[in-house]
Image 1 (tube, rainbow, N blue to C red):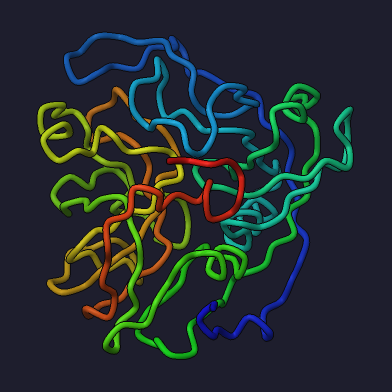
Image 2: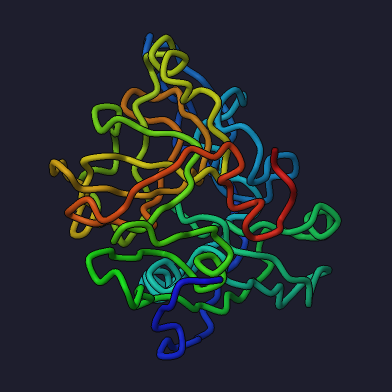
Length: 287
């Protein structure tokens, strides 16, 4: 049974954006950790063969965003799109060949990320408008005021197998991420955009099993306090979501979006290989 929240007091509101065209800065090259130039796809547009549930590592791509990426050209509207949209929100195509089709918000990077069924993706075009029914900003647990929720829709929270255990919230995750491997994004507001792993040490990624991470996986970062930024605090716990793929850039790697954070150990976790939003939101089965 879902844990009690203040869901009944939340405001449900529409925000909108359009499918953005991939772009490259001149001269197009991204330098990897060895100084080699790469010209790889990744961010923006409609990605046809990468969805939540697929591997976060191994693609010939940089920061690949699964599914469809949308943005709003107006700066203030773009901020509203980012700050108000939550993981699990419903998205509706409002123009183009796929008008009326529905998808689901699965991440926030430089753009909002939305999953649609493959047959819908085939009809989508750069520039098509997509409206998100934003619902979740201000969501809080009734019984755990110490835990701050970020980017979580009631749909996501109500479908996660959360439990109360000895005064703590028990959350399933696929793996632990040591704070020392958290890289770019530490300087950003944790309400807005993700933080990347530092994945350049491939031997360490394999040793920790992080190279098996999938897009959509829930993960835990012990001793990480993400209430007002992203910092180290002994005993703090942050639950996060893998939202984009690996990068060749130093200090960058798969993107990790904050979902829950507490400054004291009010969250405990259990390892569950199926802890992926593709399963929880019934997007596709991931085993």
